Image 1: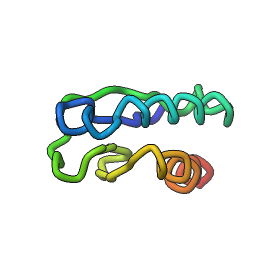
Image 2 (image 1 turned 90 degrees about the vertical axis):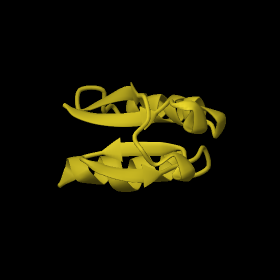
Image 3 (image 1 turned 180 degrees about the horizontal axis):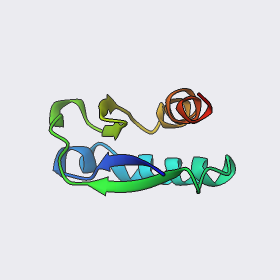
Image 4 (image 1 turned 120 degrees about the vertical axis):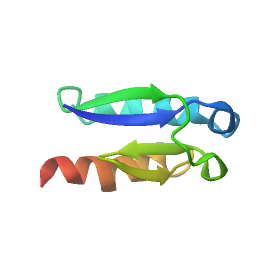
Length: 82
């Protein structure tokens, strides 16, 4: 199981972290990845100016609702296939 952590601290919350979480949840379901990906909320990943911060495999990414699905397919799902 691989963790996908989304910051829900103040800056990320204001920039739409819960929208990103909901998109990721939908992606996990529609791609049948529930046995491989666990979505977790995190308080402050430390990149507040780059919100919404997402940590995947110890790397930090800046995501928003417009880029979340593309990120999930190109980064998260592609890492599971390798």
